Length: 195
Ligand code: GAR
Image (cartoon, rainbow, N blue to C red; front, side, top):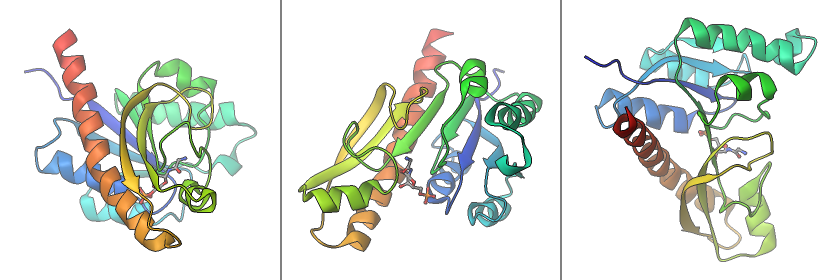
């Protein structure tokens, strides 16, 4: 029997997207395994979610390394140990460098809370509210060396609730949890059809 694709989720914060992906895997909606969660923040709440879900968490603190390349080499060693096929960024607030990009060509994906190329970078929801747009959204895309750039895989619109960050963020999160699952299903199905 063919082995399931192995995904490493990278997260820096709360981890609601990580949990949604892990639940989709555990319920059988997504045919993959998550052998490890990677976080760059040793105290991130996502670690507690990983413990609850029974997924090993590796906290690798970039501050412990002289530069990004050394940090990424340590992360890469863990990914090799786990025979990882795909890197899935879920609220991972750090640019991916040449070490990981070179090791996983077209196999790193990200989710961002806007209709890219609009509102890249930090606080995309705050940027959308400040710009006064009626509609924002969610993008899943392949990762390149830029900040929230790279070819789009799926996008979905989300209405802005004017002046209400909390409601807008809640709506975005709900869509994110669905869209990431759909994007990963699409990528894994495309890959399966190629082999
Ligand atoms: C998500 O909204 C994700 O799109 C965003 O961080 C949040 C993480 O939420 N990512 C970016 O802004 C990337 N530039 P979570 O920790 O609850 O999954």
